[in-house]
Picture 1 (cartoon, one colour):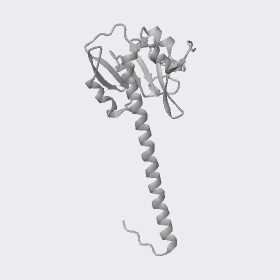
Picture 2: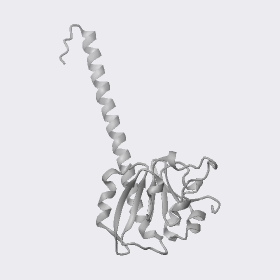
Picture 3: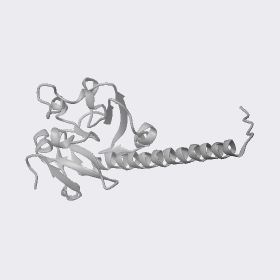
Picture 4: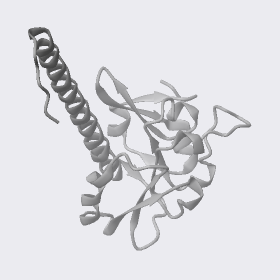
Length: 189
């Protein structure tokens, strides 16, 4: 589309609109880059949890990381399939709902609509995942019955760990991971 500018006011208006468009494009690009960095950090945490969490009865031929409800990581986790945990190759699975997440060692829950129990709003529907490490970026995830919640604090990804739920599941957690986490739930220190 070609615009013909006849007077100076129209020309200034056109320049102002063009600048505004460029500024908004730049702002969106920066926000997307920051979000991408946030999920790169979270993806690294998901892998590193395999080094600081112990599964007492790790069975099966593979170590499964399952994403439920959405995949904010996109291709960031795919490279983990070249790695192993306790000599088991990592496999990434993506599911629409929590009922599909069986035989998963780590379950990342993305869709908050499928996780909250209507009868008890502060309790998450993660009871059938007792052998799985449950992780999410949902606000107050660990405080509501999840095991590890990612929280953005001062533009940094922080970990909130619910030790009570983790201990009840039979999973073990390294003191090193506890040191870098905020403990939430009834076992707060």
